[in-house]
Image (tube, rainbow, N blue to C red; front, side, top):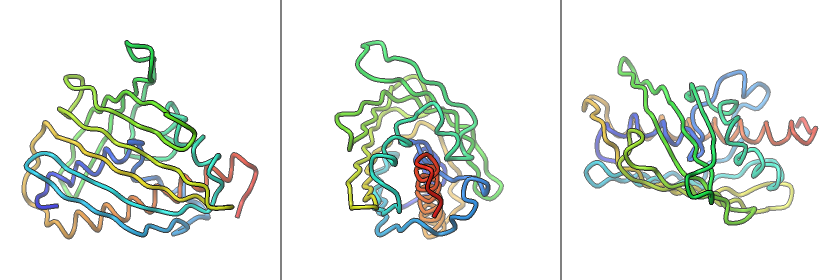
Length: 202
């Protein structure tokens, strides 16, 4: 991660291809519950590559159900100000349009993200950016959910090419630290919602 464009690029992780910084209310009683074992970020010009691994203290099936409830992902993230879901033109996927409000220090920007999302199986969610309909010229991401007994292993990988400018005022170490905090908050919120759906409160 070499420049401050990622200060805003981090917000689209916000949405599932799609999760992000979550509200304090969403994390009530679940502070630091999620375990983030690795966060990797790199870039080539305006194209960014992000991956992370995490463990959630909730069953895999319920985690998958929360991640694939696209119309209600705003319950997991305060960054998402609007989200709409409709069938994609080819009828083979869901078209998810998200409006994100991202801020870092005094710099804020509203970002539009449009993705066609598919579920190859009950362990994977794949999203592809629709160029020309938002603030990304290309990109894709994949969530992989693995059953680990009563827990769930989560692997996330994404590539995004941004179509907007960000002032080079933030150091890369600040950006990576912010991203890690947001990943932890997001996975903890996901964990809490999954347990709430099952009637479990740990």
